[in-house]
Structure formats: C-alpha cells, structure tokens
Length: 131
Image (cartoon, rainbow, N blue to C red; front, side, top):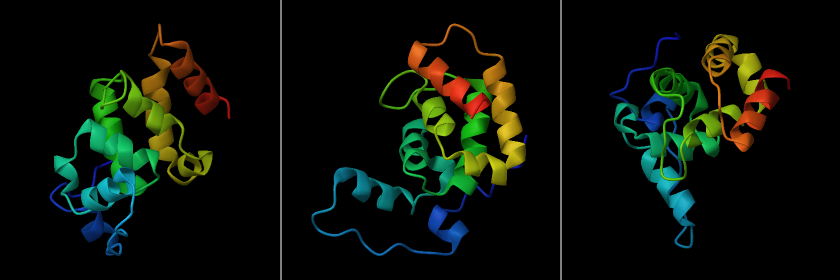
C-alpha cells in the first residue's frame, strides 16, 4: 500500500495553502470543507473523508488514507449509507487514478474481492474498472 502522509498535519499544512474564509452565506457543505482542511488528517472520520473526497479536496493526501480504511472495511460508512466512502472514492475523475496509478491498483485489488454489492455501488465499481 502507498505510504500515507503525515497524519498529524492538516490539509492546509500539507498543501501549504490556506483557503480564504468562506463567505457569510456559504452552504454548510462549503463551511464544513473549509473547517476540515484545518484538522489533522489523522483525526478525520470516515464521514469527513467522504465529504472532502466527494468535493475533490485534498485527494493526493486523503485517497491513501481512504484506501487504508477500505482495505480493512470496504463498506465503511459515513453519514449517508453503507459503502459511501467507497462510492466517493470510485467516482473521482479517472485522471486521478492515471496520475496515481499505484493507488488505482490498490483500489482495483480492493474492489475485485467484493461480492453482493448494492446495484448502484456495483455499477460504480464496473465504471471504475472499465472506464
């Protein structure tokens, strides 16, 4: 498995970039993403990772962590439904997996072992394997 980044650092520290404060009328999603970028990535929950990955935030740092979670529990669940982290990971732009071919191989190994998936998640697995 690809070595995860320093889990004591936040995305802001790892990326060496601080987002400007969200506007006063920002949605809960935007405000939450901004806040989570300041937390040490080792303290992020499955739901936190699902949310950030689903918004394409910090992928180079969060995908290795998410794959570690998925290796132990492919159906890891945030606040949405069983397998929602896997769904978020699978539906990233295919270019992400081209740029991180090692991570793509790891994800393929994880999903190749899965059976009896809900139809929607099975479709996402198939689209990932056969883009």
